[in-house]
Image (cartoon, rainbow, N blue to C red; front, top):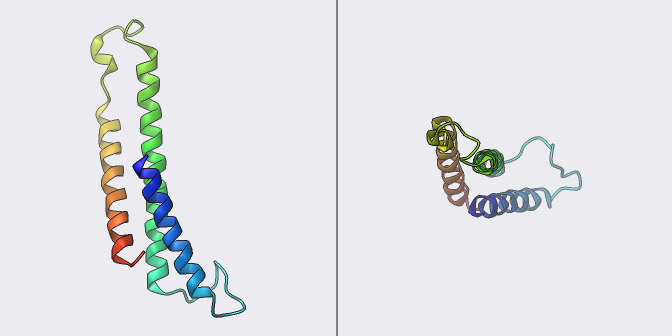
Amino acid sequence: MSAVVSTILIWRGWWGALSHENSGGPTGGLFETGHSAHVIGLGICAVVACLTTVTLVVCAVHRIRLLHAGVAHLEQEGDIAVSALTLRTGSAAIVALAVAAICAIALGM
């Protein structure tokens, strides 16, 4: 839940910075060339936050399906343990989301 909230706040900050930068000209748009480093940096943070949130949701769904299968259908009790790949992927996504949030705050979200 906190991943979704932080992603929404980062996207809101990027969209606000983009709107503020483009409010001066009549031809302002998303794909206009010449955006400031501030807007580009917040855009990168927003994309990273979105990708990490999707990754965390995929890891959670994988774990829920594993638990839903139940221990009775598994041959060994060790089969219900989370795989190392899922743990590493989830941990890396959390770290990447934290870095994106810190960078967005540093850029003046």
